[in-house]
Length: 205
Image 1 (cartoon, one colour):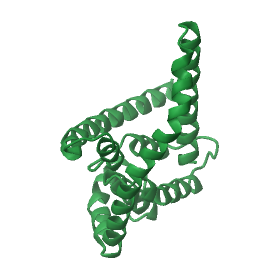
Image 2: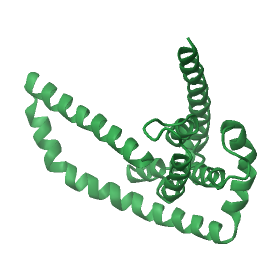
Image 3: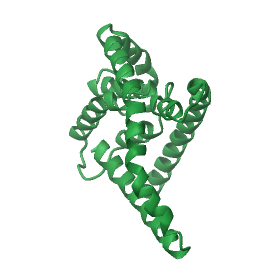
């Protein structure tokens, strides 16, 4: 549910970008730009894949070692008190909180694909406890917000792209990325809380 909703929205956004670009090219008489991009996009995509694939393998391997060594479980336990504050409706001993902690902790380390199973399990657990199956609960919405805008300590995809295009120091954006995602997450949580309070007031009025 989480990944489907996010993927559906992203597909709509990219489809809109493509349609706008093609329309603009026809209106301005620059169709040759579209043709050139269609011809070159295949090789560019392959280069991007080859640049990102080794780094993703490396970090996935590191995360696998960290998981077997119990490091990820330790980090998740450390994060549980914080997530308990963010998700007050979920019981402290509920396994859902553990899945949420694991998902967001792995996301912080930039291995988004590895965090997907934990995210799906967390949403499944919350949906099972949801009285209204057609409406997302407050915790489900907050989790989706955090999963989309969460803090990223190591942005592996950005590092791979920068390395692909010849950056002499692809890691020099790590601090900027951390600060930007921290601010982004704080603002997203504040907006989430604000909209929730507004919806509660509307229900009572």
